Image (cartoon, rainbow, N blue to C red; front, top):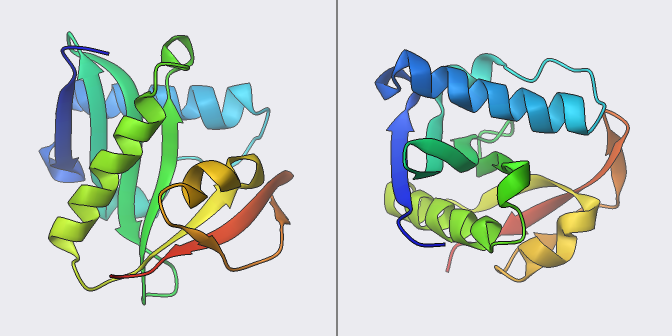
Length: 150
C-alpha cells in the first residue's frame, strides 16, 4: 500500500483525536470482533510507545511497545490491522516497523510477546520462538514467544 505515514509517539505526545482513534480500533478488534469482554485499555497505556500506520490521516494498523510484566524484556502488543485493510501486507509492515523501533530504543533487550496461537507462524517468520505451550487468555488460545537479541 502506497502513501503510508508512520507515526511513532509516546502516549503523552498523542493528540486527543489520535488517542480516541487508537482506542476505538483496539476495542473494535479485541473486544467486539473477538467477542472478548475485558479491560482493553489498561495502565500500561500510560507509558506506552504507539506505532501507527496511517493513510490520509486514517489509522490502518497499530501496535504498542511496553515493558514486559517480567521487567526483563520489552513487549509488543495490541497488534492490529483495521478490518477493511487486512490482506494488504500491513501486518508485516507494522511488525517490521515496530521491531526496528524496539531495536533503536532498547538495543540490548529481547522481546517477549503473548501471541494469539493462530499467528505463531507469522511471528516465527520474524525470528520469534515459542517459549510456552498454548494457553487460554480471555478464552483465546495464546502462546508466549521470544525474539532474542542478536
